[in-house]
Image (cartoon, rainbow, N blue to C red):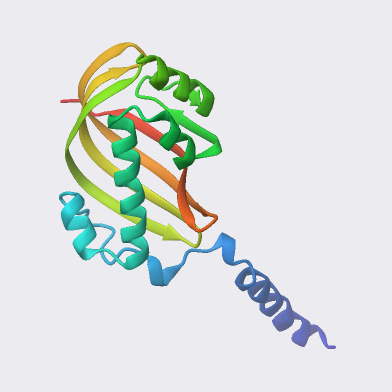
Length: 173
């Protein structure tokens, strides 16, 4: 092999290696049609979403209902074993801590409304959902009636979407 042919072979081998790593690249067929234009609400998001995006939005709705019902059994099925939350105060909360907070009533979300700016991005067996919504209730014993911007990272395991981590950030009025 000549020096010139090896210079062409190295990039070709690198490209082949990258293409062989499906878990590390985006799934372009599953990308949102207009990620720069978030939908105004959950109904509009479902109407314009692909089947896989709709499946993630259905998982989000199940999660929302489990939170509103303080259903720790359902949350235990929805969250991965190593689930974490970064709460609006910036604290890292483990799955076990979150289940205890919700089970004790220390965290009790009574209303989630005005859901808007919903985006879904798919990356193979992972999805990132972002939204803005208004929450009314109690977080870790602190009353809240605030707009929160959320980021939710979902992974597809055992044929269903499970929540691996999420972050909630208070939005200034």
